[in-house]
Amino acid sequence: QVHVAESGGGLVQAGGSLRLSCAASGSIVSINTMGWYRQTPGKQRELVAAITKGGSTNYADSVKGRFTISRDNAKNTVYLQMNSLKPEDTAVYYCNAIVRTPWDTGRNYWGQGTQVTVSS
Image (tube, rainbow, N blue to C red; front, side, top):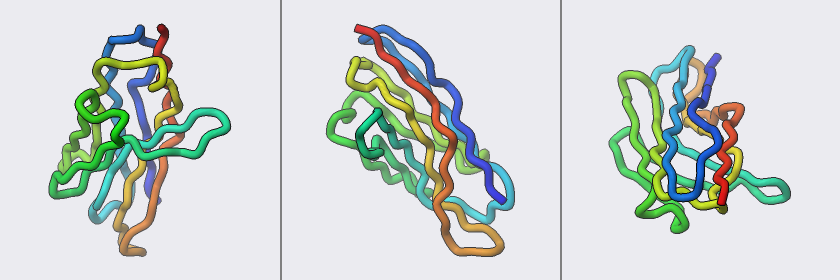
């Protein structure tokens, strides 16, 4: 069993910063890609940023230059530093991890989500 948990959401004014954290725990052999997605009511969940075990990153165009994803492989943790936040960044942010366990070679696990609200 694998558990993924986010923390660090909250309310911030436009132009401010927040740092999200996500830790995976349980029967983990290794974690390939870890990423952050976000979703607003009535819209599909969208990729914000992702990072491979080797450190290669991928960002949505809307957050390039403002958000930075990083990870600590020893702690099975991924972070999202969000700067210059805009009201349109308001969403529930979900952590995703592609995890190898003793029972399968790679499966998607999701956290429960953390709310980020940016006021104008």
